[in-house]
Length: 107
Length: 413
Image (cartoon, rainbow over all chains, first blue to last red; front, side):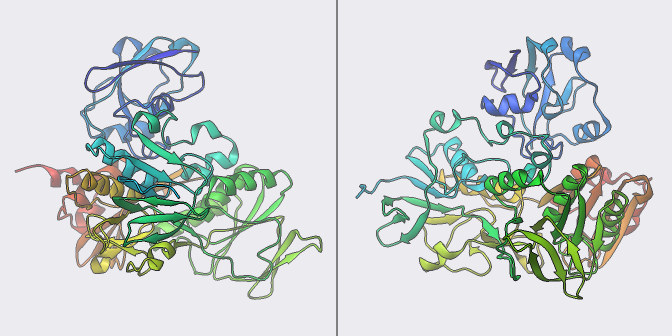
């Protein structure tokens, strides 16, 4: 099972197993990662599961589609090139070792 | 008899109940916290039940609102399968249906709502379902295998989402709606027209201005057809009712707390009893965005945001609930997002081209922007929430001009 490291806002690194086919958002919720609120439950409707992907991993992720791109424009925390909505990224075998950072706020 | 215990007792284990407990603990509330839930599952996501869960895109494992460890990690005792029967305010204790007494220092009623009882003859036939809980959704999923033709009663969000899901599964679907347009309660004509168009193109039959006279069985206790008010007979292996909900006010009312289509609370979620709060769909609360200044709202956003205010207040940081209401619905290939409340809107301004499948409708009352519906325009939706929160003086002319940068209203200066 791929391992994903979520870096919480205070710098705490949480290294957790996330099953293949599961979204990074659900992996965070199940493991109670602080700062990923995911209010809409993964429907790409709320922009509260914003994360920063470690830039070295960006190329291995599915691209941002139009809806996600628009939601990211409205994120509460600053949007960076490595900004993604964690509900839109499905964990795959090739993502073992992925590192993502939680932004300072989701509202 | 269980000894009375101090601490926070939350009745109701869905969004509001979970969030009150979480926010109280996060805010530093140090006493015991216990949630009583009458469901058999820990708090779970409800919106997918009428969408992805129905078509099998979202499985059971993806539904919980929090991981299992969340409750013990935060010293929140989650007691499932327990229904509160009464409140004794004088001695500050709740009696459960199985006869136990649980004391409280602070009590939060997060008891939600339930589907409006189905009024028609034949409502008790097998294959007639109202969708609210996970148990309802599991029952519905089980029935689907044998279903070729379904009738959805109610052209509101739940009904239309279910119609969309069933169509995706290859079922013949008819939606019966008593009003002359879909989403009559929540959406305005330009949006309702767009939504109706998409449903029709996807093969959903819409019966507007139509009512149900009775449900007809097959003689073996299973539904077979719906007879409409004008005498038509629509074949149905399955009838799904989405005709609204009623708030669960009984517990509060029996305890002498004031209710009026919802448990009455102030802007901090307080009832008239200083020990008792309420949050979520069961409350009628002061709301700056509502006509008349009071609302009872049915949405995830409302349940979570009101619960956050109540939780923080319980933790000693009095917090007013004043969030901009917002809501979403996914149907077929469109995402509808609504910001604000369009009650008594006088003017509807379309921004963008509905034919493109990407547009918003801005609603005005007394020339003030009160609500924005967005179809496949999430950035405009998020902007609308900010504009409404800031009470930005957007004019109808600006709203209709796609060349005008609405975000300029948010610039500080």
